[in-house]
Image (cartoon, rainbow, N blue to C red; front, top):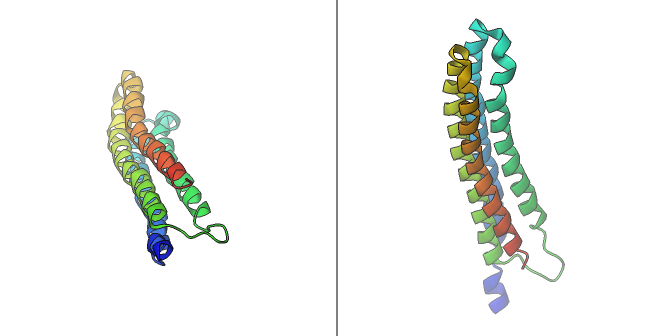
Length: 162
């Protein structure tokens, strides 16, 4: 009886929700960061085409956010099929949900930050080249938000293995 209580049939659904939330929120953040920064790059490209390559940094940083989410989603998916004779515990499902939400929501916040800073940063860089280092530093501080979520999600995922 205790075994069926610790491993109900709906427990894998909770773990799958962790995969979905990681990918959904993380890629929304990455897409927003890419789109918002891309708008600024398009504006810069019309006046100063020589600055486009340096202005791509926010877009690359936004793409990394999606990679963080993908890593956690793959790790959680690898834990979904328990070995024969063992069950997917409810505790494991909630750990996987927390890991997915951790990386997904921090990825959403980081993507939003990178998008706003990237858009205004490249527009400002077009007019004053000395802003470049400051822009990159602020982008790094935005990116690290997603990295914090990845670290927490990795720690949570290792707890699910026991």
